[in-house]
Image (cartoon, rainbow, N blue to C red; front, top):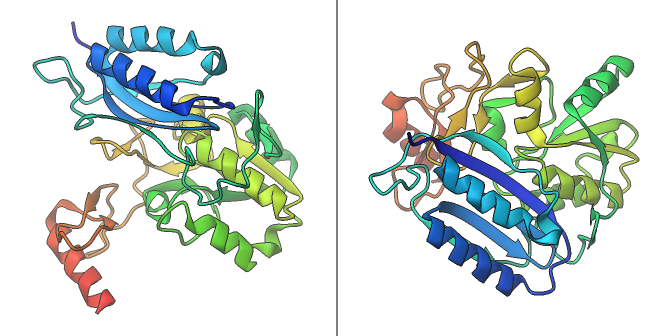
Length: 298
């Protein structure tokens, strides 16, 4: 019986020949009939793939056979389905590319990576350790390392959510001094699977933030441990056809439709081809949200 799955993974490690890794992963993915997106750079690999469970297990065995990726944390979740050729319905195709950064902060010269991963990043916290820290300190600041849209449908309670449309906006905001008031406080960075907050925490440390932590495994691992019975509120935005995932049957809807204000965790691309933005928007208000964007931009 077919079992559609999605894997989310990354590994920071010095790669002498990113192009060779790209060709290996492209050929392997095509041979196995996988779909998804992989980004490779001299600093490592970042990706998400969808396919049938047995096929993804074959991919994972091959992936981990490469020494630099042996300890990569591969996160598994349910896919929405497979087509007649047993290919994932959650991605349109397989895309494997080499880039300057595996996460586009626009600061490739700043990131330092060795065989142990990112150099100079924040202190890693497991979900359990995060709770211990919160219980022992009253001044913890959660700092969202995702784009602002993602945080609209789910975030840690009372988190600081920077006004960012893309990951590249973080460096500018940090350099502007907008969050200098946090430099004397314990700051916990978090993101979907752990990769963005791992880079972000190193950028913050380099800019004088004195006590920086990162949620190891990101929101995904936290949700697996505590579901909706911990510090997380709402749905988790994901970059595939699913749009978002919930951690339980009692997920709180924290998002609001950009047009009419009703509670929703649904996001959608603007239907106007000239508009590249996404909105939190209910089924009935797709076009209205786009009109509001156009009016605001006029």
